[in-house]
Length: 192
Image 1 (spheres, rainbow, N blue to C red):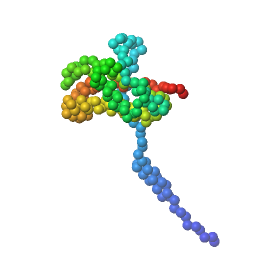
Image 2 (cartoon, one colour):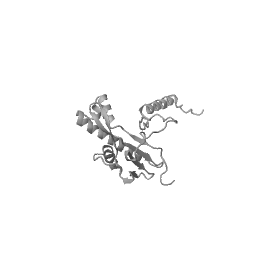
Image 3 (cartoon, rainbow, N blue to C red):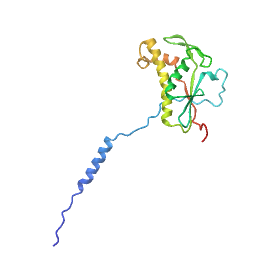
Image 4 (cartoon, rainbow, N blue to C red):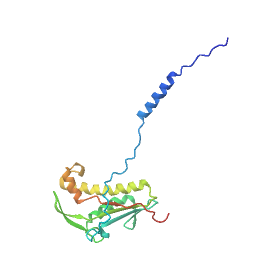
């Protein structure tokens, strides 16, 4: 009579595999891309005509271009990304009220009274080949310029940073430094 081999009990193998699966599902984190939070303006009605008051003068537009090689061209001059924030702040503030920088309009602002508010608009345009990293760096530099201006004004007027102000105080500062960044659809600058 041949000798019988002992049977291997594999019934608990499925339980172990199931517990390992649950363990990995519970302990693994899923990376999610949050993107950039932006409030888009409503579409312009097709029958709306633009009158002379709505036309934007060239001096009020700060043009920032990024090509497919991640090179920055600001106001038709090459610029390093590290200099973009400071150049943006100078454009928005126009401290010497130069003729080639934005105009100002007299505006009534709560807490501040009558203020001269810049008519500036930042135009960010990028090539279809621009890397996502460079695009985000440019976005961050522009956002940092606005943030620093708001914080500086908040400290001078209220002795606190912008984020620590009451909502109505923040609204007043946003009226003086509104975020006006226009983004054009990506194009192919300089060829294919």
